[in-house]
Amino acid sequence: GAFAFQYSSEGYQIIFALVSVLIAFLLFVGVKDLNINKSKIVLFFAEISYPLYLIHYAYDVTDFTILGKSIFFLTVIIVSWLIHTEIEKPFMNYAKRFK
Image 1: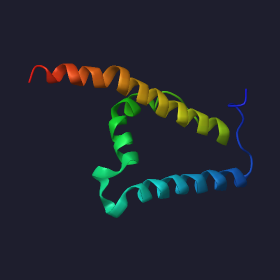
Image 2 (image 1 turned 180 degrees about the vertical axis):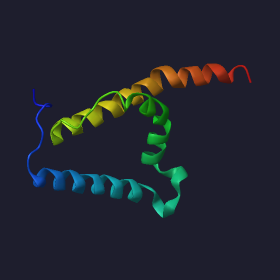
Image 3 (image 1 turned 135 degrees about the vertical axis):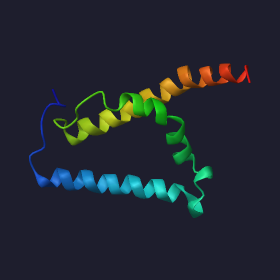
């Protein structure tokens, strides 16, 4: 399938690196005046950090194309968010009742 081909040129690696740098830059721009507590992007990833930790090692993406990697990482983020909102957050709210 489309996810099984390796990229063969350095051009794709450069594009992947540039997109990664752009994402990192946008994350840091979202942190206004280095006030991490108010950054919606950072807070979002902080909320999904445990589900993200649980599932991100599930697959080997070295043979994926750039598009395949992008789709994979987007899927991992969406699944992590779903685990957080549908499982983790309700259990956290349930546990608060016993404090």
